Amino acid sequence: MVVEKARKIFDDGFVIGLVFALFLASKIVPFLVLVGVLPIFLFWRSTDFRRAAAAKYHLFAPVATYFVYCIALLYLYPGLDRSEVPPRNPGIELYAVAIALFALGFLRSLQIENLLARFQLIAPPSLFVAFSVLSAYMALGIDGCRVKVAAPWPFIPALIFTTLTLLLFVGWERKTRTQRYIRLLLVSLSVVVVLAYTGSRGVAVGQFAVLGGFVILRCVPSFRKGLPTIIETLGALALGIILSGLVGAGSGCANFDRWQAISGISADHQQTSTFGETAPVISASPSTGEPKQSGVSGLANDVLGDSSDPQFSKDDAISIRLNMWIVSLDAIRQAPLFGHGALSLKTIIQDRFGFEHNHNQYLAWLVTGGVFSLAIGSLFMCIPALISKGLLPVDRVIMTLAVTGLWGGAMMFDAFLSLKFYLHYYCLLLGFLFALVQSATRTETYGKPL
Image (cartoon, rainbow, N blue to C red; front, side, top):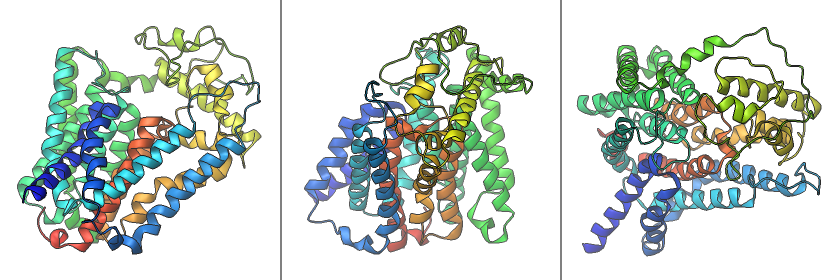
């Protein structure tokens, strides 16, 4: 009895840790070691890891393909001269930790009995607690106008909060009215986190695309019972936008207004610089490659310096991205099949703009490894669709949209899988999702209200 209670505490703690990582980021690692790594050994003999053997190749094949390819590219085709100092990221540490966290998510999640039911029960209150923490930081102005708490970037709370919220819609048809309202409220709060608390425009694109997908799929007769109504989805979105406006007005922060900068983009500018052109010295963080924080007003000077790169928008972040994308496209045209090498963004992007990536995952794959990297990377992103076989079609679509759709949309503006925390969390999430599907299909939980 004591052992079972202890195991339940460890299991619930692991699910809570997945949620609280949205504001603790890598600082959640000691907790995950306690509730994740330790129980793997404690309960190893009482866990049957063979029960999901038939479906494992849907998970392991694309994961192995991605990491074998990335590591091979890193050593066999780095794309830097020997005289060049290699960047700190990517490196073998990036991939080794990602593989370890994938194994952790896979092994630990398979140990949790009735994982789907535990996730559906524990995640909602945990997300409300997380939202309270973010709200407190916003109200107190601790992080300024873009809340991140202990995370290195504000995109982390936005991306993870939205991902976990959308995953809670799996099994919508079997939920009670109260459970449905809770999930719709969490959607509204996720909009607040994305727009008002973190100002994450890239994540917002993915978020709005997924919610738009819910609206469109609701019109498909076979999906109607498994998704919220169009009025419910649009109502939750509208409430989130209204709350975001109120937060912006009350706090004096302009996060919600950052969307207005997009209207300042000019199509009349022409890029005249070419790949290989020298660039001014950029002040950047050696650990992340991100420009040092200096406030919105000084961002252009910190990043662009006296560069002649055109100003496409009154918003410096948008203008910099557009310049990096044009330089990336020029590089892709030179080596479309195999790219310029795993570390080539060092000379193409980082030395010029001060960022360790070009703020577009698809362009990053194309620059470093050509169409082969893009194909393998896209397969890696589609793993949720591959491993969700066995779920009802509508739930399979929900899981795919919640992860592949959201992350894929956001990665048009950020190369998340080129950065440590995002890749590591995604790998941990893959193992968790695999076990979640196995839990749904091998127990009676999937046929009862969640």
